[in-house]
Image (tube, rainbow, N blue to C red; front, side, top):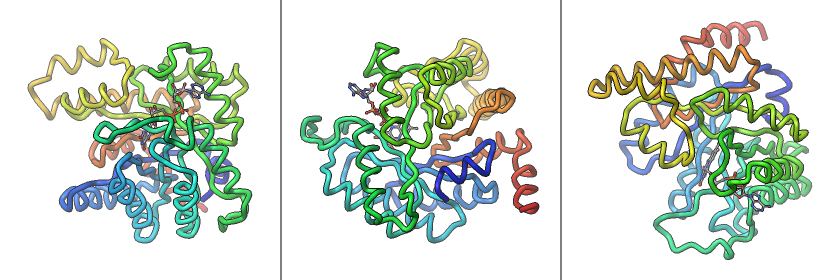
Length: 307
Ligand SMILES: Cc1cc2nc3c(=O)[nH]c(=O)nc-3n(C[C@H](O)[C@H](O)[C@H](O)COP(=O)(O)OP(=O)(O)OC[C@H]3O[C@@H](n4cnc5c(N)ncnc54)[C@H](O)[C@@H]3O)c2cc1C
């Protein structure tokens, strides 16, 4: 479903993020996760995109498989890094033919394992990619006459590449003005950062829906990896203190992480968040427990029955 229709018919959206697995065991494990999360009927699920050629095919394959074999609506991520215009056109063509409705348009993380020069990319910033997808939309190649719905990334605590926060918001506005339909945020652990970001967007006349990115901590190792990937994310002392008390007991760590993320979600819903996006890390446990603590299973089931 085009994301504009999703937002029109739902006050709050719920979505999950997966990454394409690399080994046959990891593929099996992800499909188990998908089977376990499918009954919660998220509004969409998104699939990340890496820089290497083989990884990129895995994204396409996973998106198409989800589309063809489940009731879920996949949103592929697409990035500027290591891409030429004609490659992006081919990818958009393939997704359009597969009936994919929406795309998340990103700058992309520079590849660590490949020699990379930014100046070789045809698209410098995510806004350029948004503009290109918009022009593809106008070509009539997509079965929906509006073409792809387009999402972009937002950073409540700021993006490390632009320390000037005023300028950063100007750049975000450019992405929206180029044609983005919604924003999904980087993960954050203090809702005040999200609420302030939302207010700053409003002041900058950014009016598209903003979806909050939530990642429940399920292990100390996972948290450390995430601190590296989501560089700049702040870990509040209240959260760290709780984790410190039980750091040698993995089950308690996961319980603390899920409880903390559930509290964040309750608060976001109280403050009329437009959507919550769960960084699942391809696991279902934490997301299921949060969903159930929010009473969402019944709520969505009731909506579906009533429709
Ligand atoms: C929800 C979400 C999903 C993600 N999924 C992926 C994924 O699947 N694959 C992946 O590789 N990465 C992913 N990332 C990471 C993301 O690609 C990187 O953090 C990237 O550095 C920033 O992406 P962007 O789309 O905001 O890029 P951009 O909007 O291009 O911004 C990148 C940097 O350039 C600055 N900038 C923007 N416009 C200008 C301009 N005109 N002049 C000067 N500076 C400018 C920005 O302020 C920022 O510092 C994801 C991030 C989020 C939040």
